[in-house]
Length: 83
Image 1 (cartoon, rainbow, N blue to C red):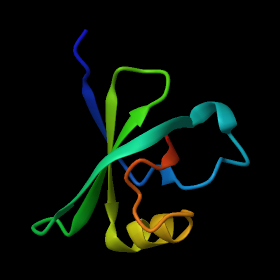
Image 2: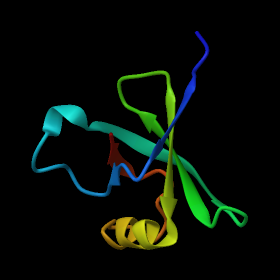
Image 3: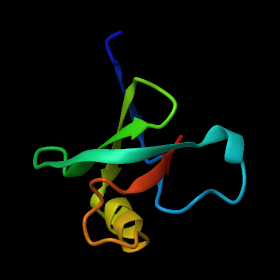
Image 4: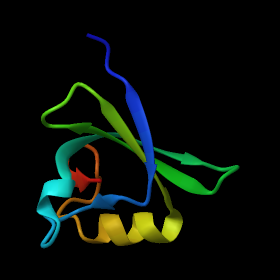
């Protein structure tokens, strides 16, 4: 089965959600890239219970907030939650 990529905007968390827990999926960050033209980060996440890949596109401010809440300096291989 081929994995598909789903793109979403501004729906990533560094810590488990406190509300609407059933709407968030845990996953692992695979790749982070920055698009100079759009001035946005693309965070590619592999959800734990799916073959799909989710790409979350976020502004620099959201990315800085997200990475500031991680326990690691680099988000790659870190467990996160996406919606």
